[in-house]
Image (cartoon, rainbow, N blue to C red; front, side, top):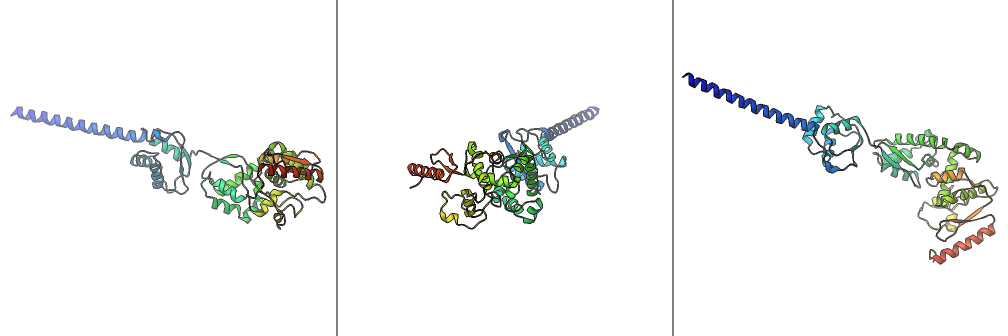
Length: 357
């Protein structure tokens, strides 16, 4: 009898040990799994080193998780959500921005990165635009707001006036360059940044003082530079082209007579030849019809064109004409007779090349 009792006790003891062992094993497995959920690799190595994740403004946590999954940035939404809850990442409106994601990150590292708002700046590139609306389209490719929202602000006359501009000269605010901006920059923040960048630009290299010496404001300098920009692609002759227009501006009885301003007045920016019918267009931008500078730039002006105006070449040329030989350069003349001869050469070259039938 005593032996049976001892046997039962022994069996019970073994059962308890087995149960305890199983519980310990389960606890270890669960603990290991939770450890892996938190610290193990969660971002696949297949995403590459140049992966960016964008969280739109006012996104919900559920939308962020769904987007991470759809872009295959996380392997498992359940483990990510569990760790996110544990780290108190979810909030009514998630922190917006553009974030660089590294392969092999754990859920913990990924959540820390997103929660801290460590954004990867976008490189906003300006190089060419005819109108302010085109600027809006270019900017929208680098920041969250769409072109319509940006354009609406840039066409808000009350706001433009508050900045000290008119709708005609607002383009002078934009200095073509590469700028680092955060993806969730608002339209107003973008404009404020451009105001600061313009001030920095004009404070360098005595630009403001040079403009004053020429009798021009920064806005007038930019306007003249926009004409130079559209006259020649050759940086080597921009100062000379600027000199021709500067001479005309400062000679009584002369108009600028700049073909690019007429093209702007037509609204047909693909126009290849300026004809007499175009010269008759009644527009303040038609410098064949109205003296002085037009009311504002006819396009974005490059830094090289702005500096060409500020460092205008001192000469007596009053005319210039494209060579028509494919070089992109121009012939310059002091007299109308010389100019007419250059124009004749241009026409011959154009016909010879087949550009004109």
